Image (tube, rainbow over all chains, first blue to last red; front, side, top):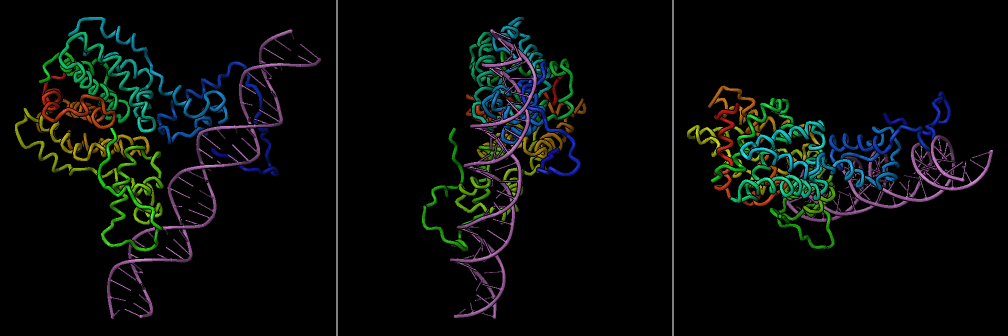
Length: 210
Length: 210
DNA sequence: ACTTTATTTCAGCGCGCGTTGAAAAAAGGG
DNA sequence: CCCTTTTTTCAACGCGCGCTGAAATAAAGT
């Protein structure tokens, strides 16, 4: 992996990497973003090094500074970017009968995060340590801009508590499915998950919670 | 959420530090463990530095190597140690009518982790990145040695799925309460939590999950 | 073809990390 | 009291980190 050494003598025939602009079609920025998502997921913010990300992208570490202003900027662009627009999500969740809200939430949640391979969710969670803003972002997204608005349309009985209760089930599902990967839940298909989880979610949203 | 718990040795005076053995009564090992728990919780494994832990304990960084053989050893002793014996827990959970299993689980879970200030749970979760063994330990503890055995006493309908579903609700509750600290759930009293969560847990354990 | 601009590589700086080994100071036994 | 053992501090090592500035090269503009 790490071949370094200033040996000038011997059988060194491999010519040094060419400098200058890349051939057209190669996208350094995109390669860095993809590699960053992978490495941040695998190793967390502190554990992921700029050098390792650049290496996976097949690119010089200095590119991170050139394109993203540093590790922090790359992190924000790569991980903190949500895979779906909140307004679109709320709209989709409210499109249908209120008594199937739980089902739509489970379906959309799994649909969205499964599409990213779960990596983005894991990255968010694993980054909570490194950046307080991540916990804030999760709260802002999951609770305030989505669940709160959804809950408000179906009841006005302790909407904040109901929203966080629902969040606990959703986050828990994400943790077990994407971060901890407990089987069999991690591999269970969407329909089975819906049948199992949606009723509980529905109860948090509209049922009797004491 | 500036939660300062535990040892109050933080304000060590800038006296001319003398060498050699400490005066009797001071326990360097315990101070390091307490500080380590705090810092690992706050910053994760990679983010927590040996120097910062030692500083908080009011002790020289070299003490980490002397007493625990290094950062890794300190981490294992401080964080990976579970706050309750699994067998005791299972015994307590099974002591009572099966239809109140959900309630007993919620009560014991919150009771145990609240007692540590939630710090230990947060530390476990935040360490999943750094050490694969942590995810394994969580699975071993939550699912295999506790939930599995408990579920097996009440049903033989897909016990593994039921156990992981229950785990998803429990882990989710822990995440929202201790790691993400979403309000109002993070500050909700045990009885209210029981009324809200226990029925859903009960359904995962003994109810119709499709 | 020549100039300009955008992109990339490279060498290396300064810093903080985990760790080490020796020396110093307290405690304990004869 | 001296000698040994235990505990602690200290100075410093080697390493890898994020980041920088200049040089090199490809692409684009005229």
